[in-house]
Length: 377
Image (cartoon, rainbow, N blue to C red; front, side):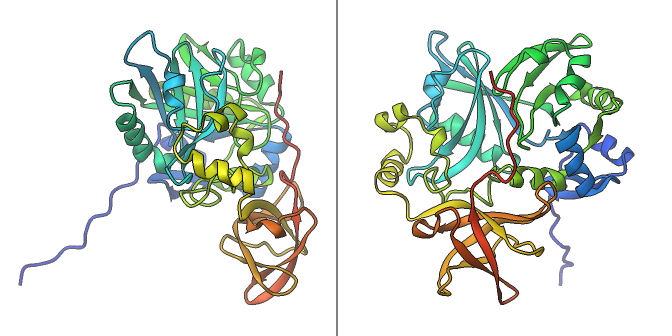
């Protein structure tokens, strides 16, 4: 009999800051095919509060970055891209960005992403776990109209109320940006793309930098007294408190923007044009209301309700499921979000969460759990 060997697993990819994470004492875990830091010696609780109170540095280089360029120089990549998303992209001003979703013909969300206009081009940032499929989908769907130039750059997020005063010491001009604006600026003679955005609910920035300069920039930021390195654990609790969706958990191909409470990202013009994938289904849900909705859920007591926890009404009937849940350090107790039947989604509705077979009382709550502190113009 021929000898058999175990199938080899694909090795984890690494970011340009991989070595730095080890030098900082990070605990590393597999995430979206990458070896990523889940926490540092400060711990998840400390890292969470550090970001809320001062400034936290995140490695988000696993995200996908690409430039969408029209084949015909006279065309507009933003207008072309609207064929694939329900967002209002062609109305973006130069240097402005927008959150939107790639949708399928059923209105389901293939991924959520950020799009930034620079003249007739678009700069796209997509989720790490979806980026290969996203880029293949976009390239195939827009073939002959636009080309996708995938960028192999690092991406660093600096988040927190002191982020701006830290970053302006290193990069001139960041203080002139407001929420959802971006600009190509200079750091030590190197061109960097700085966007005033993030996924924590705090003011902050994302900095796209060439991989070979990423570690030097990260070290320069960490040398500032207000900054600490932050891992995936605190990133998750921060975005949950801020009421922000995590793709693959709170949104996916089985959820639509209407069900996910993301209709603020679908302007009236796009609803009327109805020329993006799944428009008919999404418009039908807008007119008749979807049968389920994403809501905030606050468990009573101290025990968190994790993803997959069943939600029941007071009569003991199943009405939904938790999609994200955990302890909210800034809230001082457990927080969660999930989907419930529309008739049960009113704020203040009392529900039960089935935890280890026992009902745990909870309340349908408005999102976000903490105020979002973006700096808007």
